[in-house]
Image (cartoon, rainbow, N blue to C red; front, side, top):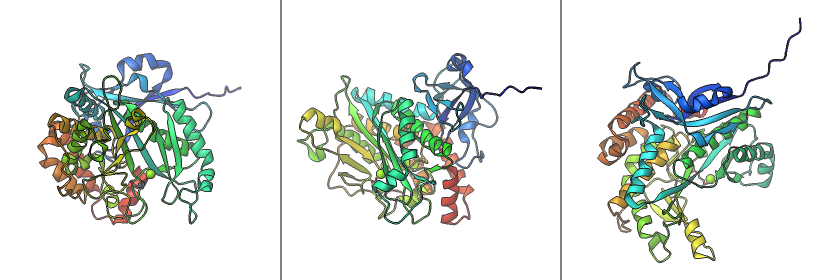
Length: 427
Ligand code: GLU
Ligand code: MG
């Protein structure tokens, strides 16, 4: 009897980066791509309640209902799987109702609503990107490795392949470097307009994991591997573009270099920051990072080129004023990779748009409030903020708080190190 070699079929995967910050969905044969792009996948509302560690601990949706996971057409990205012929194409998706309208608890829909509010408030679009730090399990740590050329060279097989994978996926890789922490690296990509920026953050994170996995390792995105160790942050850079694509956040003549509209946007984020941290630093371990001496912020504050602030204004000089305006951006540092990029960027855009709509300004004399010290405290602040609950909508706010409270309960009785270990295994 002669056996024919069985060749793997190309697969697609449609998913969303959900409330827990994991990219979850369903796969299909690429032969059915056209149909899947039209019809997506059916999904129970309760799927959005899958926890950081897997199980659904609590849900307001029960076992009923049916949603559609609808792929974002222009976002397909080919994910390398290590064995020739087994690559898979990943499609970020929206969660919509049977009628095709956005579902109120869709993470990407939350961002899209924020972008619409920004457009309505000032006719502006967000131009954003995410810098993602992670620990590579396959690159040995020796003393003195941060930023060193040989650490970068040792990662070469990984870094070069990752950059190629990002480029093949339609992203523009910007930098790859050996970061401060043991075996820690960072990858950055060029900014893009609108919701696509969060799609690209999701794609970049999954490609980073996939390239490491294809080489027999892990890229761990958890914010801390030990309670006193190095921190991996996710920094979100945002600037604002007008309808003609011109950058409008900068005015060199004004305080901090912020234009009038730029200041209102930043002031909106600062005003809502303590209550929206639950969305950007959304896990128990996130709060081990937001402590003094970590190159991570502890207060809702703003500074030019200060990596200890919640918002670092990046105001690089350039010969040409237009180039200088285009470079100018705000970096939000109160975020890590346990956050869904849709929720994190969405929270910032909603808050910034609100700052513009209300004409807020920064008060240099006002003391900066401390950031919450734990996830529980952050969730209390979210629940008591009418504004942030308003951005989310009652159903999404309720589901999110329920999910995150169940995450805290699931860690009850564990030591700080055991908690770090659980997140490192999950992210
Ligand atoms: N690893 C630091 C963090 O957790 C940031 C270091 C840097 O500024 O790149 O945010
Ligand atoms: Mg960094």
